Length: 283
Image (cartoon, rainbow, N blue to C red; front, top):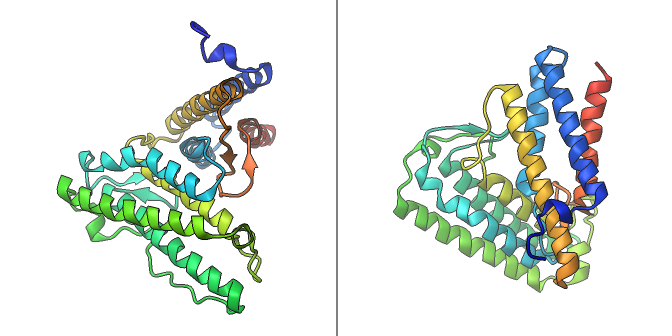
């Protein structure tokens, strides 16, 4: 309807959750200012808010289209990597830090690793032989000399060609999997291929944003920025759900950050509120 704002399209429950998040944020900030919440706790909260915000995007439910949609959302961030300081190490959390080249490395290595996993899991299902891991890639905790080298536009274009091709190869493999293959649980109770593919899609969105959306280093400032970012993304998600319900479009879904079950913005908001409530209650 012309003139209708996104806020007016939110349900009473959604508006209430956003208000509760604002109240909780203010309470955490006051407690931190007073020294009643330790800096590392505040930093952990900030990192969790930022992680949720990076992945808080409704996506197609089918694995292949989910992968392609996540890559399309991530690619503009990847295209800007040559514009950033190549030697600046942006900290996402205690285990993850990024430079332009490290982001490219992790996106490509992660996709290649799981492309290999699909083939291994198919053989595992058919022949009951446990696969031999091919974990030769390096994690985000490791920074190589090449990770801080300059990145030219031509080099970035070559990286993007490799990444585009690999993501599409994974998507095509996903399209060839039957429902039974997607949902087969390995004998070791590991992830199904469906969950792995969701994880791969969500991880690319997480990797891609950090240089465009870095957080301050000081814990309280970091928390304030990340919490506001999470609330903004949540408000947008609520508005998208309202649009889908009135437009006749097929609704997209939210996935839990680990790539697990389908969830909702309300469930994610309640999880954040519960975490902060527990921290404040323990003071």
